[in-house]
Length: 265
Length: 375
Image (cartoon, rainbow over all chains, first blue to last red; front, side, top):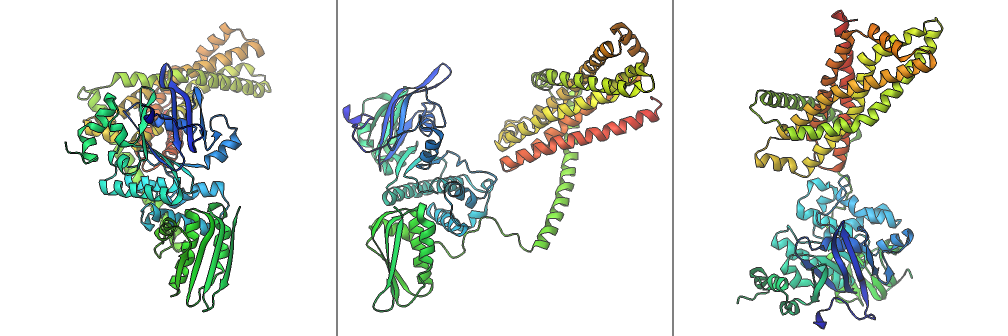
């Protein structure tokens, strides 16, 4: 049980540390004193049933949802209590990919990618264009797509463009909300490889919400299971398969879970 | 912090670039500038990264651009002293020849302008055709509803009626009260010069019941509800909710447009009456306090000066204006495509065109009823 704890030792090198987090809407309490640690340089996958509060947890960590109690610290800085100036500096530390990409619909793909650079850095246009092209190539979008508007892109391309924007400032921490949902298996596998490459080359820390068992198995160092307002367990996929909880058993032991792990029994 | 670059010629005439420090996005502008000065030369280049403390994608891009420049000039270029992953990152960034553009080219400015004008004309013609088609569809569904072949959604009508009418009572009441006060006050000032202050009642009575009350109410409703229709339907369209209605077998005109049109027509009738009353009350209060005309005398005088035809003309115009506002709002909502900007521009168009058409119809009614002998 201790091995599957969601918290790491106090002296561990953590990117994100969540302690005693309480969130809710009206009378409904969604997270009840939730604890979670994301170690620096790891890929943490977050799974949980629909409505278990995965997206809300992510939104609370990045400051889009208010927390009722508890603390969130990112790279050792208190993310919830920071003053606006500190928040702004802190926001540079992470990139976020929303489920539908959340691209600015009035800007082209290249302009979308350049928004964070324009906001935080004073770069010459030529450098920004070059970097935007490099980002597009990195996420596997064709160079022609840079002048397209988001409404002209397919769902998968929007996700890639969203990832390119999230990566624009080379943040050390990336939050991805269902990055491979709705992608064909080939694109999804390419996305997994891309994330892995970014992590290996740039030492990124990734917090990703996913239901894609292949992604969990292929790239996640640890997987946290959200349920009953807490993190039920957190560990490698193999550890979780041995974890005695009906939902976790069903999740990893069901036909899809077995197929993804190559276990035909 | 920061990066530093040094370069020297190697014995064979090539160059060797030593990069140290942080090669990250914060310093990429200076890095790119510095690297641009390293002109390609035979036989080749070696980039030494062993002293670099951090490299991110931006730094890798700058190095990659340098290498590409040398390769394009036909010389070799290699990276030394970097971890294999970093080399992989640099290689992965090689950008294919056509450089990135942020927007598609506009071409020759003269032709682009002509093309823009042509497009605008075609677009307006399309828009007019589309509007007529939409109007026709709505009228057909409305007619089918009236003869009972289509269901009238009372629930939706009541809901829209509340949003358009009941919720607007406060603002429209206040607005028309103030307008009534201003008309009475300004009228009294002018008429006093002829010693004809008492005719202020004629002014306020006829102006508000026949013209001003109706027009101002219509403009207010266009701003409040016409815009809401366009934005609601536009967002639904972006969200594919309109498509969902169609696939379930519901006609969006029947579900969305007809209830709004009916509610808006009925509510504008009610609001115009209510607004006119508020203006008359304001005029009465003014007459009482400033012209020393007691309320009873004011009411008697109103009965003498306001013709039934004035009142009837106002009440005929109101539902027509309501129909125009609703149909414009819904039409522009259905024209939304693509992005959030389109919702905004269509909402603006809905309000502007609704007010414009309302005023055009008002002028038409004014001449029409005068010609008919209702002065």
